[in-house]
Image (cartoon, rainbow, N blue to C red; front, side, top):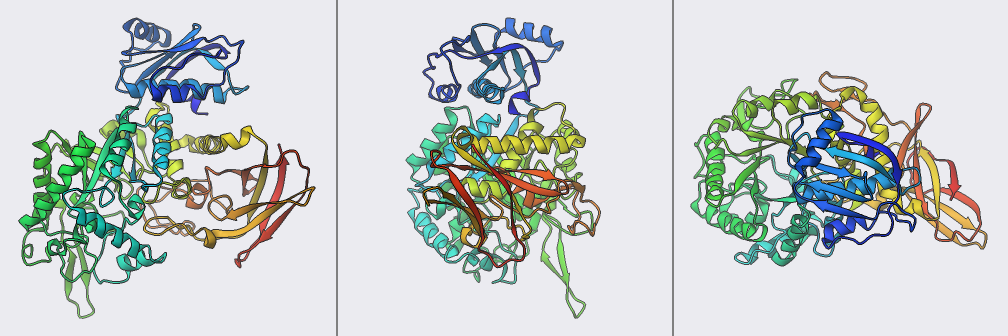
Length: 637
């Protein structure tokens, strides 16, 4: 349970809160309002204290037998008296402490008691984030829910991709072109994949048409989202893709594209002075809205290199480094640090010799000639400023890539962070990494966050970021606990009311579909339904969506080191753990559990008619796949 994840804790019994006055602070009040109370309760209120009192720190050190010093985001919760005290040096820590009280109550046997004692929590790393797209203009609540979840899990940063999804007053043509572009990419489910992978003979960037729901937010709306985060102590890093993933800039300004023969250009010309007039106009508006300490400038998947007449013949590493440095210097003049996706500064050759990232890529043709299809950019690592932040997402290809940043003193933060796959966390953190951030490359609905494994990454990441006893060998224990935590978090309201608990599985097997640059297709993924019949003949229909609330029973729970080719796994060599994506994607809505060698899934369904007797539950398969839907049983609560 989340309440058990504390650096230090002592308890002596437990007690319930009496009704108490909520604090004036909206964020703190929203958390505390969820704590159950009783007229006979012992605790009479919550006091928030900042900074942490030295007397209490000295007492905590003596009680826990440690000389630890608080770090940023540490918090102390003292529940030994009738007034609970939450102490921290910043707003985030105070909110974390409030969540500690709430989670303690929820995880107690009676669902309302809070342990009496002392909690002292200290994070293991300073950067704990999530990268997301801008929400759709009519779905801002999904963003706020995501921020609240991050805070409950003790995260401190959200990276928000801006791109074409924010209003640009100096360049409204960006927004109108963005809408047209996204409409085209969403014209049918495979359209974006078709453009990226099946139209041109050169490599292209993934297409982020889900950003902003394919529309854009006004600057005032974005300011509101930033304020929501900052009021809760959450750092917001705007991501403005530059050099690559620049389609939002180039659709209205194709004259700045590196390729003049690409109808959907994604890389701009870094040798054209007019490029930077546009880039700095856009960055200026982003800075005005976000007021950030750090700006993420993208630079990943830079493929179209040295193609145009201006760039042809220039060293690839210099094109990359000069562009990054030019933007870095512009930001530095305004007191802002630069963060970037860092694979293009790595001579990234995998364990099996495959070339990735900034390494040179060649093709030998049938006539024996050799063509350099992608020039090397990795030497740029020694040409860029040292105070940049490397968003390192090649951590899974080879662990030693970390050393390229650490030995140069470049700040390293892991991107596309996947805790269930991450190898050797403790050592790599000790070597200098500041933490990590999972990424969500789709819209912000719970269903896509679930199926892309983001919820699993966030909950498992919570343990890695805060638990000093983290041990890779204990993963089987962790995964069971995390699945239960996720299930209870998702289904808490359902489980508190009238509901059905259904245990089911299937012998249907479908390939895993990662949802990025492709929409979720619920109709395609629906394999059947349950029909719950009440005594009066009324029918409750429960759709069964593969990968969302049901999966195949032949799931794999064990992790395997992926550094050697294995016929059982069928995966390319990586310096990482493999984990069954189809097990990950169905967690959150359901609770996966093992019954013998098979995997089953517990599903909670609200009962809209608890006063009626259920006479039958029918299983109806609607898909043409081989296999069956297996109903193991249900409980009506």
